[in-house]
Length: 514
Picture 1 (cartoon, helix red, strand yellow):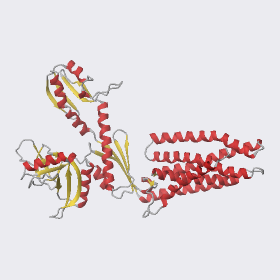
Picture 2 (picture 1 turned 30 degrees about the horizontal axis):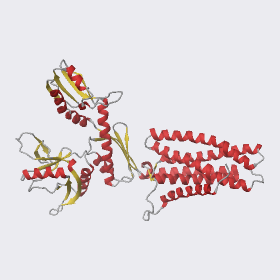
Picture 3 (picture 1 turned 90 degrees about the vertical axis):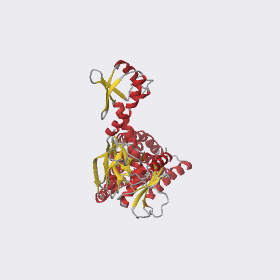
Picture 4 (picture 1 turned 120 degrees about the horizontal axis):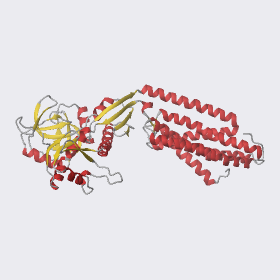
């Protein structure tokens, strides 16, 4: 256990040196960055905003159940089953049916792709039905069907939320799924939380519709942002899905802020055909059910690009461009919880955490030096190396350090000392019976190894469980504790053991006090 080859020694200190270099990156001048890596400060340390969002899947369920109407009618006609009184509700369909038994057989058939059976031992289906009256049936989504809709909407929403926040330029945001319907958003250092809330609160469902006469069929009355009431066709010419890009710009003639947009090939064809056939008419641009602009079509627009103008300021055109670029949310997002942490509170947390770490660190160093003399100094060197490597690994991972994370570092100090105390006490026991000092140290390290590994591995398992099942600050604590355990074992059983071997081999013939 005390024998080290030259290759082992070089490897041990080379690994330590390389990891230590990364820890120094946190102190580099931001204007002369060598490697852009550092430990990020969490919300509780640098201040910022915490938002808990929840998707409202009810509009999506209504849309999905409406999309089943035509497939169901086709299914009934194909199998010669007569139906009547088809009624579409918020989350179900109700209709009268002539042959319910036959309908049951075809509805749950594996050959029927319409019901999307999930082929497994549970035979979960997207849709189910129940009898309402004598010959009426109600079709609705099963729990599995609703869960599938929620999961899909949540994943899509997380991606769009991430795009919107990234476009704003917020650094180190945390965007995580929480449960079946919620999204956690942490924005450290955010100075304008209201703007983010406004951006996340809009679904950005964009569509283009022609303005028609009030007495025409298939129109609805809508009010523009200027207060003008317009009769708008229910027929959608084009949606925001056809947009490739949107950027804020200035109108060359009026010098007013506008949004310039570019369409894909299909969108350009639709837009070109509509503007060609409706020169002189007005085209309503509808965002989230509200008319934001209704310009007159003066000439055919076939270039695949256009402009959205209105009574916007530059900030509004920037935000509108961002919303259109990031895409539409599949469902509305509601803010169910909101917290703000001021930078002063974050500074106090950092000071408290650093003071706790320094006090604990100094007390441990003094105790080890007093208790174990020269070997205590070696243990202290290993402890300092442990902290340097811990910060280095966190820097490599670009981890976010939170106040519980600092607590994990403080606990690591205790764990590191515990490993060395177990080793030294085991060696003291061996020195009482062994005549050879080298043999006593060798046996001491070997026998203490199992105890130290057992203690640290059980703590590591607990840290992994906290990381997997915990959330937010708990994960931060688990990460620093888990990494700290690994660096503790490295510093104790490689670095400290090598330095100990140097002392023991030099004083093999003399008495060693420990």
